[in-house]
Image (tube, rainbow, N blue to C red; front, side, top):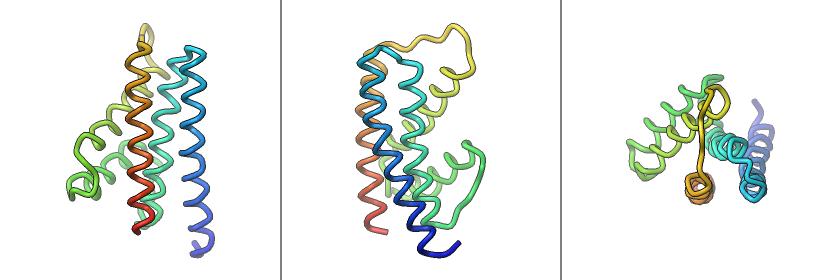
Amino acid sequence: MKESDRLTLINYRLSRARETIDEVKLLIEKEKYFAAMNRIYYGLFYVVNCLALIDGFTTSKHTQLIGYFNKNYVKTGIFPKEIGKFFKESFESRSKSDYQDLVEFTKTQVEQDYEMMKRFITYAEDVIKEK
């Protein structure tokens, strides 16, 4: 991939991550908690994909992306452990909301995850700028 194409894709994914912040806010206001949990995860997914692009890591598997992030960014101390844990938990919540029956998410839980999502994305943007 050409450097200009890679930078375009990184900027696009950062834009998508930022956009999900607004989407989640609207979904919470409309009490659409399942959809909010989905978008929370994908906001994180987009920004971690930016890091992967910078590092030349590619995968089509969500679990491999989570493993890559933990190995290269959490275990090395670049990201706090609680953020790494949140990325994995967010993936699990998204999977539950999309694939399991009789799952409930409370407004409080979704709002807490939303705040953590915003923190995660902001932190990741700072790391990306440094790279």
